[in-house]
Image (cartoon, rainbow, N blue to C red; front, side, top):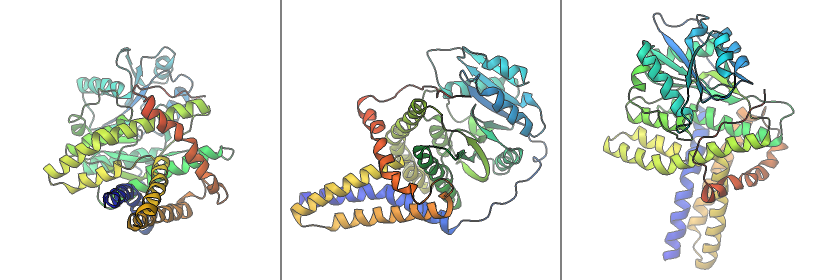
Length: 398
């Protein structure tokens, strides 16, 4: 009897993220609509700034800023505020030469993107705050139409908004990068699109996000959270500013070219995600009951989904464990529940690949996904033995 209850509890617990992702995929497929054309002009009398935190980005910042300035509504480089955070290279000099507003911050005891953003926001507060603040990373590119769409959405709804943030696809990319690109598509477009279509808050993904200034006054960015964007989205939702999704506005980046840099970046993201699950999901669930706000509860379910590879690992391990328990007790209910949940999850992922992901992965390359999942085992093992706790800059080639 005790083993039966244990098996059923395991099956139900593991099934939750499978049903969350599966249902988000189903909603995205069923409610898929053609992209609407973006507006060509900003709403009247809207002031904005673009804030870019940068740490030793001299190899890439010139190209990033040149592209961004060419796409700026108004074409005024001073609307870009770059925080050169603990830089020991020529990042600040390059940005100044291109006409950006440059702030230099030196504080080796408080390192990370959150501290740099907090520094920039405090400066803007003292100099006459804009109506809307856009946050971009130092290695991203977007278009004028996407920026206008994002800023107009925030101005209209008076809520934070997130662009569709994807990775560039490259023909000669490794199979690992192709699978990562598809997983990125699932996390940053498909799932956000489904949450937005159902009227729920979306997670923020780090770049291409914009805020009404009033929303920024309710949050604290001066911390070293490894995934400060996810934390920022949670704080905004709790404080009455649930983020929305601008699906037609795109911002792009590249995976690091060096495998060691890619592993470091992935480790930071996924350790930070797991840390946020353990620390913030219980808080979100508690707040949802206190405020009787079921949208916060759904956001908690969405954020509570572990990284995709770990979800698959946990599910397969759970199936094996429950199969052994079923062999001992002859009780198969738990096994059937979890197997059904996993099949639903897998079928919905296949549907997303068929409708949105074939330019990332061919049918033949799908067979490599199990190897990709296994290759990430070291990231999750180090979370238990040598957890990454401090922000580390991603090393990028030019």
